[in-house]
Image (tube, rainbow, N blue to C red; front, side, top):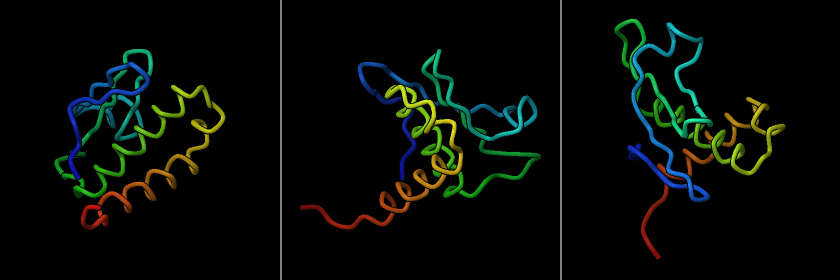
Length: 101
Protein backbone atom coordinates (compact mmCIF):
# COMPACT_ATOMS: atom_id res chain seq x y z
CA UNK A 1 0.00 0.00 0.00
CA UNK A 2 1.32 3.44 -0.88
CA UNK A 3 1.14 6.29 1.60
CA UNK A 4 0.62 9.53 -0.34
CA UNK A 5 2.24 12.90 0.33
CA UNK A 6 -1.24 14.42 0.14
CA UNK A 7 -4.86 13.71 -0.70
CA UNK A 8 -8.07 15.68 -1.03
CA UNK A 9 -11.31 15.32 0.86
CA UNK A 10 -14.35 17.61 0.64
CA UNK A 11 -12.30 20.32 -1.07
CA UNK A 12 -9.47 20.23 1.47
CA UNK A 13 -5.94 19.11 0.67
CA UNK A 14 -4.49 17.04 3.49
CA UNK A 15 -0.70 16.82 3.59
CA UNK A 16 1.03 13.74 4.97
CA UNK A 17 4.54 13.92 6.42
CA UNK A 18 7.03 12.07 8.57
CA UNK A 19 7.49 13.55 12.04
CA UNK A 20 10.38 11.89 13.89
CA UNK A 21 9.51 13.31 17.33
CA UNK A 22 5.80 12.59 17.81
CA UNK A 23 6.37 9.94 20.48
CA UNK A 24 8.79 12.14 22.42
CA UNK A 25 6.45 15.13 22.08
CA UNK A 26 3.24 13.17 22.70
CA UNK A 27 2.37 9.52 23.39
CA UNK A 28 1.43 8.36 19.89
CA UNK A 29 2.99 7.63 16.52
CA UNK A 30 0.40 9.28 14.30
CA UNK A 31 -1.57 12.48 14.52
CA UNK A 32 -4.26 14.13 12.44
CA UNK A 33 -4.03 17.89 12.78
CA UNK A 34 -7.42 19.05 11.55
CA UNK A 35 -6.84 22.79 11.82
CA UNK A 36 -3.77 22.63 9.60
CA UNK A 37 -4.98 19.77 7.35
CA UNK A 38 -2.01 17.55 8.18
CA UNK A 39 -1.38 13.94 9.05
CA UNK A 40 1.94 13.30 10.77
CA UNK A 41 3.48 9.84 11.12
CA UNK A 42 6.47 8.63 13.10
CA UNK A 43 8.17 5.69 11.39
CA UNK A 44 10.97 5.09 13.94
CA UNK A 45 10.95 5.01 17.75
CA UNK A 46 14.18 4.77 19.72
CA UNK A 47 16.07 3.65 16.62
CA UNK A 48 13.60 0.86 15.82
CA UNK A 49 11.65 1.17 12.59
CA UNK A 50 8.01 0.15 12.70
CA UNK A 51 6.98 -2.64 10.30
CA UNK A 52 5.49 -1.20 7.11
CA UNK A 53 2.07 -2.70 7.92
CA UNK A 54 2.01 -0.82 11.26
CA UNK A 55 2.87 2.45 9.54
CA UNK A 56 0.13 1.83 6.96
CA UNK A 57 -2.42 1.11 9.68
CA UNK A 58 -1.35 4.21 11.62
CA UNK A 59 -1.79 6.26 8.44
CA UNK A 60 -5.28 4.85 7.83
CA UNK A 61 -6.18 5.41 11.49
CA UNK A 62 -5.42 9.11 11.01
CA UNK A 63 -7.31 9.13 7.69
CA UNK A 64 -10.40 7.78 9.46
CA UNK A 65 -10.07 10.55 12.07
CA UNK A 66 -9.81 13.08 9.22
CA UNK A 67 -12.90 11.71 7.45
CA UNK A 68 -14.95 11.72 10.65
CA UNK A 69 -13.80 15.23 11.50
CA UNK A 70 -14.81 16.52 8.04
CA UNK A 71 -18.18 14.75 8.47
CA UNK A 72 -18.56 16.51 11.84
CA UNK A 73 -18.90 13.16 13.63
CA UNK A 74 -16.76 13.99 16.64
CA UNK A 75 -18.38 11.31 18.80
CA UNK A 76 -17.15 8.64 16.37
CA UNK A 77 -13.73 10.26 15.99
CA UNK A 78 -13.34 10.24 19.78
CA UNK A 79 -14.02 6.48 19.87
CA UNK A 80 -10.46 5.16 19.42
CA UNK A 81 -11.61 1.53 19.35
CA UNK A 82 -14.00 2.28 16.48
CA UNK A 83 -11.40 4.33 14.58
CA UNK A 84 -8.68 1.70 15.02
CA UNK A 85 -10.93 -1.23 14.08
CA UNK A 86 -12.27 0.62 11.02
CA UNK A 87 -8.72 1.49 9.93
CA UNK A 88 -7.56 -2.12 10.35
CA UNK A 89 -10.50 -3.40 8.30
CA UNK A 90 -9.82 -0.83 5.58
CA UNK A 91 -6.13 -1.75 5.58
CA UNK A 92 -6.89 -5.44 5.15
CA UNK A 93 -9.21 -4.72 2.24
CA UNK A 94 -6.64 -2.48 0.56
CA UNK A 95 -3.68 -4.86 0.87
CA UNK A 96 -5.58 -8.03 -0.05
CA UNK A 97 -7.59 -6.71 -3.01
CA UNK A 98 -6.90 -8.66 -6.20
CA UNK A 99 -7.44 -7.98 -9.86
CA UNK A 100 -9.50 -5.36 -11.55
CA UNK A 101 -13.04 -5.39 -12.94
